[in-house]
Image (cartoon, rainbow, N blue to C red; front, side, top):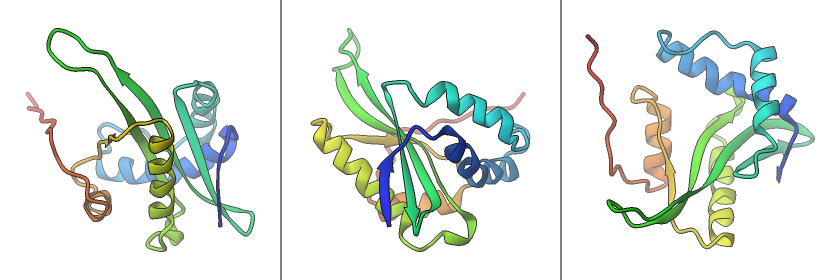
Length: 153
């Protein structure tokens, strides 16, 4: 198994299908149907942003998943102290390859990137009904410190 940084937006767009379809299934009101061409174009525009890092997980030359992270700098202001974090935008693993430790391996690489950048905070969010994500991040000792709520009118 190999994890490496990538700029191959076409592979990322193909692998995005798994996380995107899950979101569309759980929240069809908010998520469109997966469209490879449009998603590919979006990743093409994002992949060279210096704040973003895309890590590709491959095994036997087969692409099995990715993680998309962002190095964030929150400057100090009158309300809050400044800090840096690594923000996890997405993890996507091929459907029939889940529960094999690939997500954990990707997160271990995220932790290494954070440490290399002297960052001690990993942040992320996930959709409330995504029970797999809840369990995964709980297993990785993530702590809930803020809740995002809404009211539909």
